[in-house]
Amino acid sequence: MSTAPSSTPAKLSRRISIAPMMDLTDRHCRYFHRLLTRHSLLYTEMVTTGALLNGDIDRHLSYNDEEHPIALQLGGSEPSDLAKCAQIGAEYKYDEINLNCGCPSDRVQRGAFGACLMKEPKLVAESVAAMKAAVDIPVTVKCRIGVDEQDDYQSLAYFVEQLVDAKVDALVVHARKAWLQGLSPKQNREIPPLDHERVYQLKRDFPNLEIILNGGVENLAQSEVHLAQLDGVMIGRSAYYNPWILADVDLRFYNDARIPTSEFEVLEKMLPYIEKQLSGGIKLAAISRHLLGLFSGQPGARGFRRSISENAHLAGAGTEVIENALSHIREPHQKLNIESAVA
Ligand SMILES: Cc1cc2nc3c(=O)[nH]c(=O)nc-3n(C[C@H](O)[C@H](O)[C@H](O)COP(=O)(O)O)c2cc1C
Image 1 (cartoon, rainbow, N blue to C red):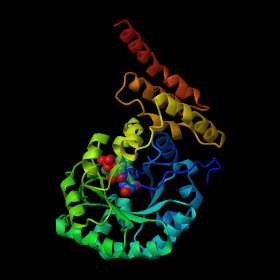
Image 2: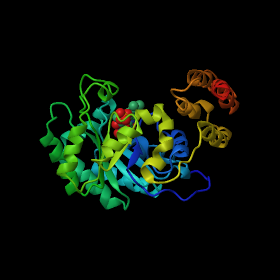
Image 3: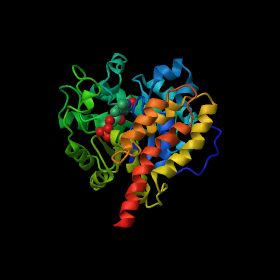
Image 4: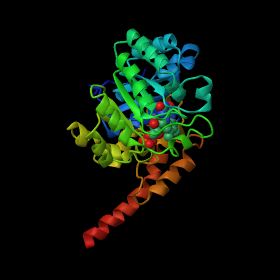
């Protein structure tokens, strides 16, 4: 674990969370997101029980203290393995353990976990119960609204009922079904239609269960609409590709001050972190790739992205790559200021 000084972490709240995303929400990404919002709950990428029980645990689980509150997402389907991994996660001081019941990739299906677990509610309930018996931290599940032909509301409600009986602490529902054959994971995040109403219905039928909606939430205004009916909203791609939306989360949803006053301030805070990681042998590109969307939609954003993408992977690349890329943003901004001053 990092030796960085720990600040007082925010309390775990699932009002706003940032979705687990393989190859995206690694610890560098999460450190960056934490500079934008103190309170949102951050999720790791999915880590399989096989990877943890047979692999390098520290490589999979280490993170920076600043990332709290942070949830570890597990992929697996063997209750005793999941319980062991949950325990390891708790020893690493994760704030929550989440079980993936929504991922449709072939690799995951071969291991018989992820979205295909929605066809095995009893096994999922047994897994949740085993994890809860092993740890004191919350155990949650992330699922879809259906899978393959099993896409009627009754089946979903039955699945949820089993989880409630197993005392699951919260349920995150990606509001579209998954097709296990014929669609790629990417298509499975785009083609099956979103059905937010079905998640609202779940909340009406299970009012005591904490339910978090996921899928297709693009901004905080939409989050607010969902929060009128539900306990939380999980944002995935919009948070990753347009991270600046996170800067308003603390003020808008947690009644706390905003942390960053500008994108520049966030980058300034990233630089010492990047320096430290570089000195530990991490390549700049492994961190800078998460910053590419910071100015999304603003003048110069494309130049900023291109400049980093072209230079970050070069031998010896350091923080000057970020500083140079900023020239694409600063100049148009300065021009804008001058124009408005003249007007
Ligand atoms: C690149 C990528 C990787 C993902 N990996 C995971 C994962 O490891 N575990 C998981 O539960 N969901 C994963 N997801 C799904 C997201 O967590 C989320 O459910 C989905 O993107 C819908 O939310 P959104 O519309 O806000 O992006 C992934 C999504 C993307 C785009």
